[in-house]
Length: 300
Image (tube, rainbow, N blue to C red):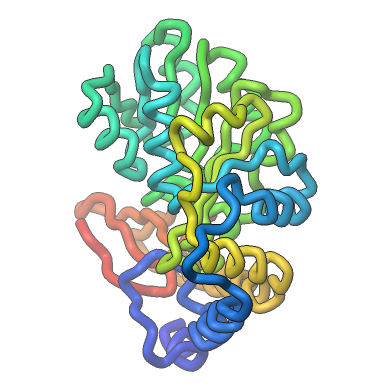
């Protein structure tokens, strides 16, 4: 396992959560090529129509549903400020943005700690959140890597009296996503990023996808000219040339499966299936550990 990773990427940092197998030289060359034609004293287009069209075309959705921002952090923060005025329910463990934004703006924040996502609808029913609440969920989840399917998301939103934001930062590493549900679930918002699978973390490009959001959300909470033109061009170039990214993701999935099987064969190990770049596993008498799948550091 380690030999395979080191052969592909001998200088890899095994403690991070991005796409460790995507060649940085490919990414660097692609980004540098996008500088040609940029007029740096100018600001570009305020509402990023070309990037929205590229994302819409890649996922075969209406580009009017796409709302780019400076990384998924800005997008998540904007959604909490826009929609979290009643109560913010954060399914933890999760990315910390919902908690930070709620604390800063003195919103009613309620962490919902859960291990098995199948228990979430029943727990939410017991909590009885008020109408207009905001539910924050990462899928696949960090650190467990589990991911709800179509049926689970439908059931979840049928019981939840508000908007659900699903952060799909690691979705490309998995085998499914909930983008196809957007047209039938108006209370669903998806957030994605170019920082993980696409290798553009340094350029800070994230976006929300939702038919229910409007231009008012972009102008009031994401703001005009919020993304530099180089970032926009680089994201569009990646979407137009996804081959190296898709190949690297296929390798990640293969290595991940090998990793699961290797650990599962050891006496005393239980490994939870993961759709992300990390996994949780249990060693009898020692408790739960989290580990980078490619591989990396484990922590109690």
